[in-house]
Amino acid sequence: GPVKMARALLSAMDAMLDAEMEAGVTGPLINFTATFSFAICGACSQFQDAPALGQMAQLHDAMHHPENYGYTPKHNITAAYEARFTHSFNTQNPATDLQHQFLDAYMTHFPSTPVYIGEYHRVGASQADDLGMILSLAEQNPIFLGISFFQYQVAYWKAGTERDFGMFGLGSVSLAAMDYFGTTYQIYCLEPQSDAVPGMVMPSALANVYGGPDVNYSALCVRRPEAVALNGSGYSEILAQHSVPQ
Image (cartoon, rainbow, N blue to C red):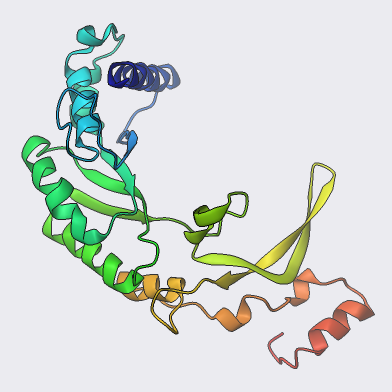
């Protein structure tokens, strides 16, 4: 339950501080996080009807009162939590949910602890619209650091709707072969996955929202000279592309 969860995180935080001390880590120190789901925690001591907030409040209480959770820390985890902790959670809820379901209460109860979304992707939505809104929320709420988009490549080892999140899938062209502990694997090219908006692909939508350059998709599945065999067959393969740069 929530108490055991919080005690495990207390131990993990204490262990990280111990490892830093043993390694002699100095200078600016990184922040820690524990990423929760955007689920309601009915067994938590607070926010039983609000997503993610119950788990965060339970951890907050544990970091300030570890003795109530059956843990005696070796280090000052309360000070480390207050100075070096960033809350995080994962969700595929629409961006329109975030302000009223989470941020309003979060800003009131955790005014000095930053928060971000560790995995975010509203499947089936226009990524330009949804991501544009959520990045706008990050600009309006300085304590909300933003999101990490989920995810780069289709997770082929999963099944069903779990394969809907990747913005790139694998193409049919092998660009190279890789030996991995005695087994040879083909390294396939990437192909962009479609966005909900007709004619748009997800990587382009993300590039537009973040203000970055788009991708030259036509070059993704073209074999490069350095990747083919150094013989007549490899030469013929590159020659057949009719590309002067290649």
